Amino acid sequence: MARIHRQNFTDLLSRAIAPGVVVWGAIVGFGLLITGPLTGLSKSEETVNKTLASDRTPTWNQITMLWSHVGNTEYVIAVCILVAIIIFWRTKDLLFSLVPVIAISLQATIFVLATLVVGRPRPQVSHLDPAPPTSSYPSGHVGASTALYLTFALMATRIERTWLRVTTMVVCLALPLLVTFARLYRGMHHVTDVSVGMANGIICAVLAYSWWKATRKDEVGSRVKDAAFSRS
Image (tube, rainbow, N blue to C red; front, top):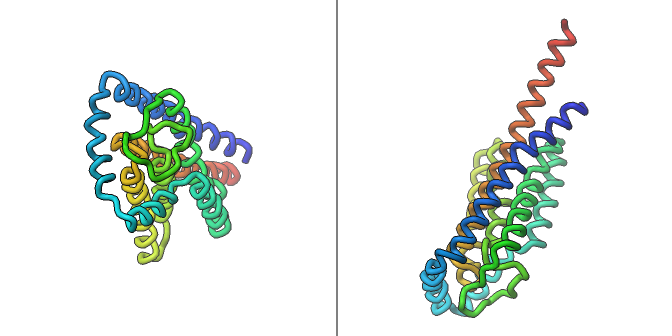
């Protein structure tokens, strides 16, 4: 059992954390480009933010406020912990229940460390949300909501009831898109900010889920070997 736990941790380092370092490097590299040699891209992106800002209405201001809150750190953490507990209660699979925790932790680490290097200012329009201390690039709200809800969508593929599986996946895939639109509409991010944030979330979700699938195969293989050894 101890050998399996050590292998799981080693797999986490090689299958999630190490690739995460590469992802961080790519995000930082692109961020330095758009805040340096490609600063003209920022000016062209402002057109999108200004167009959305000019079309704001009180109704859509309220709707997008709710959508934006989906990506708030406190809500992401609360939903993640609650769902992880429910999944463990239903499956008794600790590693499976930790998948969303790993996904959002990896995403958050990459996001925070990237913002420390790339200090991109927010779009030059009125901001409808309080600006977090982190910079505009990449979007933490979009990254966090994507990592969390895409992970849920991947985990939902194991649900046996078709209607429940499809409904869960559709809702989970839609939520990050709503957050993305809200952050653009509310003047908090450029298009590239939310695009890179979503890419960060997607990669982290896939890495975390792939890690669990690998550990599952390793455990099954280990049980088979142990059973074969005990019969010999």
